[in-house]
Image (cartoon, rainbow, N blue to C red):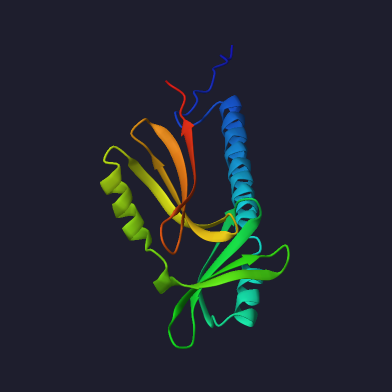
Length: 179
């Protein structure tokens, strides 16, 4: 009589269901990576939309010959802000409305209050404030600095001041929900 013996499995052999689970998990990770990459590319292209048009408009219609930075500001209307230098190394900032294909204004950055000076003034006047950001903006049909901070009452504040003299334009304070 012949005995039937079960062949012992190797310790390196995985069950068939485990192979399928690992394959499915691997595919899900791969698909998630592809989706995240696609989302990043779409978001980045939306964020930088119009930058090349703003740059070419500034180069053709202003004294700026070398563009160093292009940013955008979304207020009442989307505004592109182009910073650069002239041939004589003078630093300028141009504010552009691409909807109208128009340069709204061009400022010499030496006539503007520096963002560092604004930050120091904010910290001197409000010791309990937590600074977040300062960026160029365009409010009330004039160039402005947008100061973002959390004040001593734990409110999220957007404050707009004129770039030439620091005169206040607008201030929005948003109460944060209590946790």
